[in-house]
Image 1 (cartoon, one colour):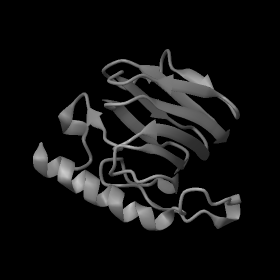
Image 2 (image 1 turned 45 degrees about the horizontal axis):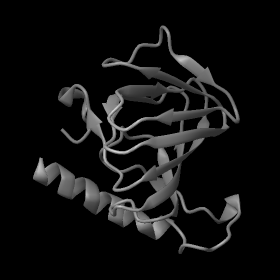
Image 3 (image 1 turned 180 degrees about the vertical axis):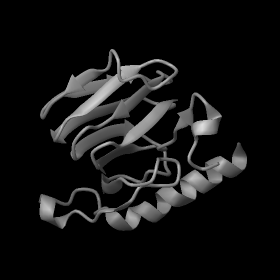
Image 4 (image 1 turned 90 degrees about the vertical axis):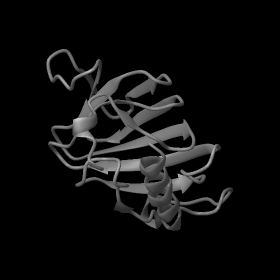
Length: 150
């Protein structure tokens, strides 16, 4: 557990180079995108807008996911609020990713994921989501076999 948390925090700290200092205004073309940290499935990109994902503080980030991207059932230690900025996002609650019964969020759609709430997401088109959370940014997969760090 300690090693995986250390690796996750190290990866999140590296993402800070993609963000801007707190209090700076920015337009979309100023965002610095990079690969998602190792605790998320590869193929998506992330931009940190504000905060330090390795610290206990408010964080704002964007996640750019390609069509067909999936994050298996997981939970976070703090609440995570997601807003769809482009494309669409399917969200579901439970211990296993299931496309049946998922809720489709369109542009402007919002979902608050409570702390330790098992949930999953998937896309069927290119999608950008803005996420607000209190760090550190951590994720625990319901089924450890599906953890991309393994």
